[in-house]
Length: 105
Image (cartoon, rainbow, N blue to C red; front, side, top):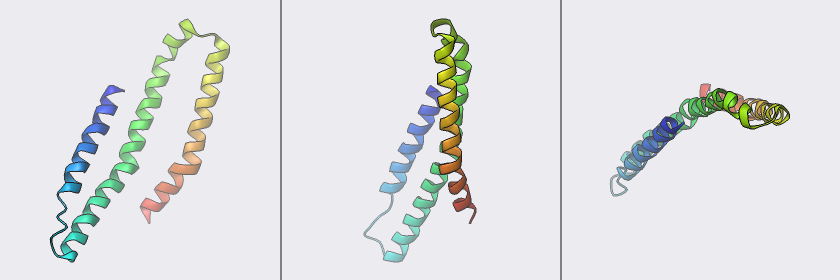
């Protein structure tokens, strides 16, 4: 989980460097080209990379479930899993599928 968080921080640092590299004093066509390349980069990050990191967090949560079971009653474990599955389904059908469709067009 710390590795995924570190990757996100690194990507944001790269994004800041790329955004500061856009020189607004240049001709408008060059600024537009630079801005478009920056936004294509941001779109790529907010798509598959973010989804992969969120999925890694979910897998990490499930890998920690045996440790949770030592300290939490079975009822609360079931409640946690039901809400997590509900969250995954909601995320899939309301955010991911429309985003993938938008990226493919």
